[in-house]
Length: 68
Image 1 (cartoon, helix red, strand yellow):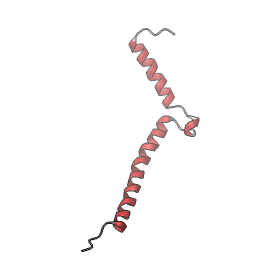
Image 2: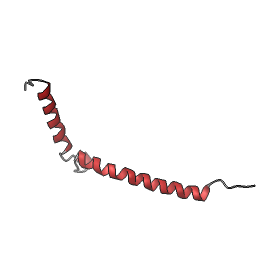
Image 3: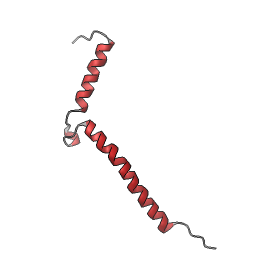
């Protein structure tokens, strides 16, 4: 394959990336990379919120108390 110029190369690379990101992958249990990215983007704030609640509960139960 002969690539005529930089613009042609950009179009080819963009098409390859688009194909790769929208094809199911065995390593992602049949999800596409785009699907996995969206699921992970949703899961991260949820994990953060759960961790934040756990930390708040811990702090309520084990904070330093005024001993004077």
